[in-house]
Length: 91
Image: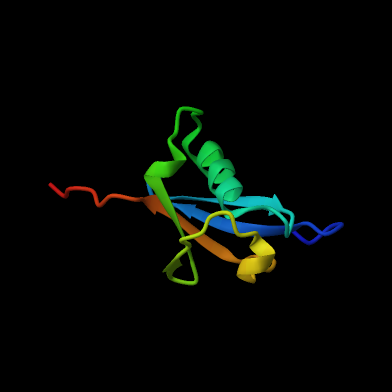
């Protein structure tokens, strides 16, 4: 995807399903809304608690999800990772 009228594509890896989704976003989109859209697209169900997941950008957790993508410095093809907030037990 390429930038069109202020929109650009970002890559979001959702580790629960090991799937990467591409979203066309505006620079004014908040991290919380990015997380909601990516979880909805990757998990294919609406009963997902976004509070149960965290977002990482450039290897660091985004603590304030009310920040916009422009404030984070996200550009076209920026990678994000969404993973469970709590560690999962390994069998």
